[in-house]
Length: 419
Image (cartoon, rainbow, N blue to C red; front, top):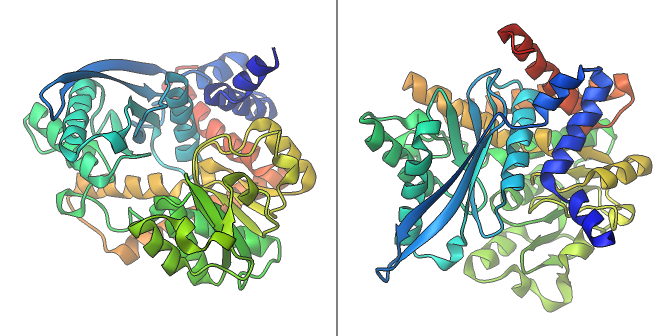
């Protein structure tokens, strides 16, 4: 019996629904409006056949969830991962709606995934999987319908293949169907760094709110993929001391601060664990270090009721989607930990994706400095709005962020006559 309770608690779709309930209750929304927000409007399940390099064929399964399009077309990433589930994709599409809402983008939330392990496939097989998946969902996506982007184990090159496939099917060049593309075919400058850069802007704002100096503020980062790696570099450049980082194989810790350039070089050439055996630390222990800033930048459900009481960080900035469970949120709130929720902390990626889409529609492209200036303005304004609403309602930043988003979506649904 206890196992089933834990599994239910860690189900991302149920967690997303609990978060909607908490914010909707504070807004005193009618029950039927809350129910609409707790369920994706449209969910597509597809299967498709792909030729492998050895000439055999393999059938893959994939999903695309479109949560709510009252404000505009849906928007969200496509992940390639062996553990992709329908509930995960539905939850992620909901989080994307609230992420777009909190930073004021004219989008609803979407998300997609293919059940596969890209590490076990050649470049040619990955290309054929990418093109086949886009063909399978092509009637349901488009620049004015649903706009995918990169996510876990997907890349600008994969986005390029998908955009090319969609354009061929529609008989017209359609760069606006997808974001996170290579620059040469309509990508935006600043997009690769956007998720981490947006997260760092909110961290610096939160440090200021807590009167913690940025210089030598200590930070631990779980996950050394794109977001975690760039966040480590940007925080280090801002004056923070990065004392621990980790990837899927484990982590490294040095209370005197890590040499981030050396760590990045080791990641490229082999493993960050080669930094030194005496520095080895587990992913679990990293979460419990006594630091000013903890950045979960890996997968969901890493901070739970089981370990939240041992989290010592002053600020938890969620660069990953859904790293903290509702039970853990309550524990952290009682401890006075500032949690910058994922829907705000990692919204830099979708913000610059929006900029990319706008540039594609205009066929006019901005400099990196212009992109970053617009990103900083949007992220800081959004952080301040969430912080101020949280103070007004005496609640946490996550609930305040959801309140802003849900109120906005509900207003759009009412304006359309849906409710």
